[in-house]
Image: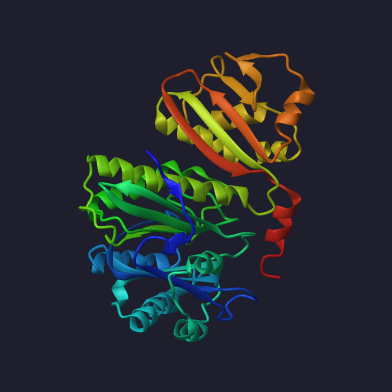
Length: 401
């Protein structure tokens, strides 16, 4: 089915406005973002499973219950995570939502809050107050929103797709931020998806969980799951279609669009990993089931030794199979195949003679493919990551200094 890439980011769907401003939370660049639906919409979200979670995560969970899964806006600050900040942090996150609600005419519970940046430092809420009063929203503000949520990202991450939905033109779009502390156990650091489709609350929640499992939960940069991970989708029904229910043809179309948006954003996060010079795609096939395939793929993509070998274009392929072996997936080394790019290194558990220079070349480009066939079943999965460079250590050794 056709999906057309269009400009506009999160404001490409009908009825969405956005904007960003600088309010002094970080040293430079936009650091406060608002995304607003002109009419109330249905919202779904997934959050970090880190037991140390930021104040906005707790507040958003409460708001989702209070509003009955309805929302009007997202407000996001960058430069400060508002994590490990106690009761004051919860009050500050709640005030962010209240300020946006008062400014743009919605209830506090209709606003979801997100923060990203340094952990363990109180949010300068007085700067947020001034920023909310100053921020201007527009139909052209989607790109500003993508810029405003960045921290160590080197570029914004945004996408918008138009498609036909029961004879109505619909749009689904998204932005994300993430470059370091990426090893989600839900979604990613921050991702916000908007659509003008009409979708039932139950199906939207199911669709987001399914999409997160295929996309954001399959990306890793450094093995650290953030305190602030949030992925949320807000739909406002302005496309005019009948609300989508599970099991319908429209549900399959919407799910594909959501998957495409989430997968693109997840891949962009891996490509923009802190200090990264190479993008890694790991394909696992022949696993006992899909869960095993996901376990193995994520373990390989997250292996520091494998990531370092990719950085050095070193075809030390035993690290790939080693990571699959400790992943928790069922692995029988006597059956496994390992391939780097188009170079087969192991087949049926037997080491193959290979040209080391050719194998090294397969690791030398900006995009690297690692593939493992376990020959144990029909399970398949794909994960994404990046190489491990000296620059990653430098960035994180000097993050607050």
